[in-house]
Length: 229
Figure: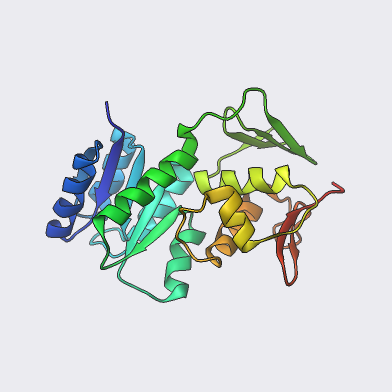
């Protein structure tokens, strides 16, 4: 059976249009036209991916994203009519994996959905691959992360960025390199979105996100995972 995509979009014409393309691509679909219903369906139906409009009646998309991130790591793609960089980053900082700006091509949306789902674990990594840095341990096979005895829930994008940083521990990586190595050349987000995901990673894995000891900024280049922890 196909993977389940939940589409939360208040413009019914757009929602049904998107649903048609996902079904043609082999996905099973669920549709909600407001944030309250969408959040309830996400909790009950446990979809593999949520396509979430930013502006929704009832509970808006940002609040739905915030609630879903508190409860789990389901991949989320934001739909937004706002083209400004700051507005795009808000959703990413709340934990969305990608965003698509309206008007958009439904074929592009389906392609991005496939990319996010691949990053969420559709491709099995080598068995027994454990990465460690200080108290942070990543089990690549099980896609699990812990700091000491505490389990940490990451989105697929955050997980792949952390794995990439650990595999290149001590080596500064530019934003462009992180996108290519962690997210793949098919990823079409702009490089500053990496900053939003790094901010989320620090909030989750750092003892003090304001003074990071694991994920360090290398000014003029990008980021690296500390070698001496």
